[in-house]
Length: 136
Ligand SMILES: [Zn+2]
Image (cartoon, rainbow, N blue to C red; front, top):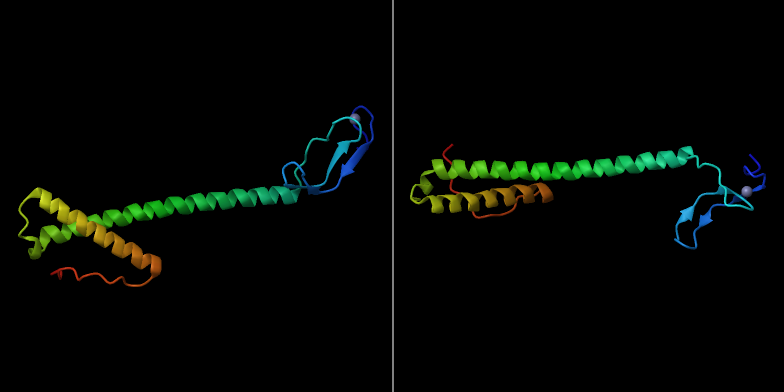
């Protein structure tokens, strides 16, 4: 199409950078006299860029969700380990009150959890004071 619906000649604006927004824009066609523009057609390269961006966003969101899930699984596992240790190991037989029991469990949970996540993060063993030896 060489003219707008009113018969004015069209002109092609080369790609450039918007003075208003500072953002780059692609070449486009506009009427030289009125403000008419042809309906915008996404070029394949635009579409590919859009799809790629969407896939990257999706992958990032999935990774974030998985990190959170792994963290909560890791916390849950740490809690189970702590409960196992405190309820089964004779070293903790001295604990009589429930408050003390829970305090001990949560302290151990935190220790298991931070130990595990640090080991994963840096791929090294984090030195901690030795836990009571398990008989299992
Ligand atoms: Zn026109």
